[in-house]
Image 1: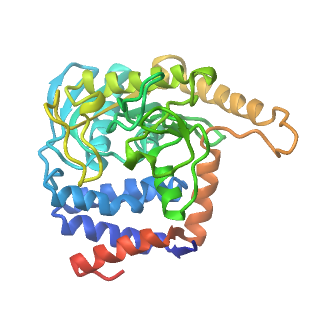
Image 2 (image 1 turned 135 degrees about the horizontal axis):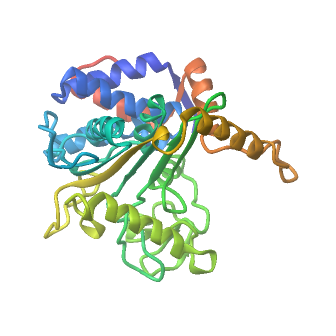
Length: 359
């Protein structure tokens, strides 16, 4: 299956027009577009414009409010809880991160829990907002239950990603952005579009057996926690995913575990919800709340250089620092354009037809 290449500017213009057609304000349309395009630029194709049609379908199903009244419902000098009013998580999470940063400017750290939201794109975007303020950023979100805990046949957790961004001086920032599963659901979706099999250790059947079927989730199967199985420490991935679920939802008042609303609009909402919408958790920590910023950043540079210069195993050119592959992807794609699979292009064309836009 061949890729088609699109310029960043054209994809940005089109995506923003779609959000405007949904009824988003210009400010919200621009913010949502920025988050989506950041995923495509950084090579995380599963969370970029490929998901645009999914947001539109959620809006059509009246599960996304295009004009939310986002507000703080609980607050202390260093913390806050936000009600996202069923808005786009692409808008709500950056709004929350700005609050966390402002609180960190005063208190040293700022922490914000979010309820009543929706899918918020890549976790890394939100954590990286703290970098320009000489702060460390943290971002996490729960998601609909597609993951079977260790020893379970039932799907109880989402892919529940964690992202941490750390500022530096001369070196590029450290940015770790990862799901707490062996593979994110978006990677399965890409394999399905390419009609390829999944590696063993990514998913299991509804009876709990290993499988290479990339479409197994539609047959009652499940994703596996980071580690794949008990022998390879899947209990650690299970713990990480649980921590994200608790911070994002039990703390904020969002739905957790098997009650988290699904992203596909055609999947029925779980019965007897225990909270409101999807939950996120973001934080910002001012570096100089712990030590002089220049001292920290110089040592962060030293940390990165030492790790980068460690001896690579045979067959590898160098040891990577978290954030390196995404940075290289962004540099290349800003210059050469963003590759999209044919099914994604067809989805975007269908949106153009729906909203009478040019694509």
